[in-house]
Length: 227
Image 1 (cartoon, rainbow, N blue to C red):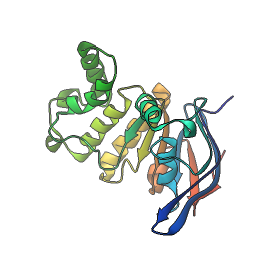
Image 2: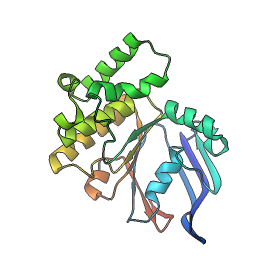
Image 3: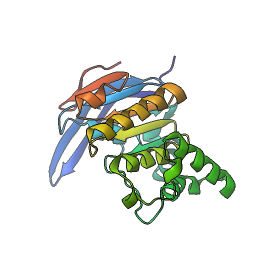
Image 4: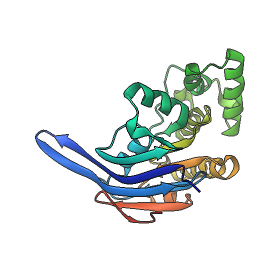
């Protein structure tokens, strides 16, 4: 079976002044549809860079990165922006919610770019907030919600467009242990019950155990768990 994400001989470096700093070296990795993987490694290992490449935020120097049959390294900037909006749901460490918008309005934001009617958008947002246990908080603003609740709003915003892949960058990094456990349980349910493909960067070994598979990066190279 063809993998949902096919990465072959991927490399990425950045310029720092006149110096070229290599970050990823010859990465080859397949991610199946419906998989839940954690990308682990020390600071500077390249895990967030790899996540950003998979999400189409950045482009590699060389290599193939195919998602659902599309080599996204060949897309132009406009095409890539459209592709991200249709295929990627983002969950960040610090939530990135708009403070002047309610939970409902934050979740509705990605749907503003679709052809859904206002009634269809409202129905989908209400359904999604219900899925993350915040049906009774949809009119609250971020500063009226706990950190765990804000992250659940962020998860609702990420899944409301029914993306192909959820990319999570340290999603529990700013949460207490109880809230982190709630968020990880939610991600596991999204994977098990809805078949969502999830790629999560974390430095937390406990958080990584929520995934079906761990992929380790050391100095820009896969050091185990690849497949």
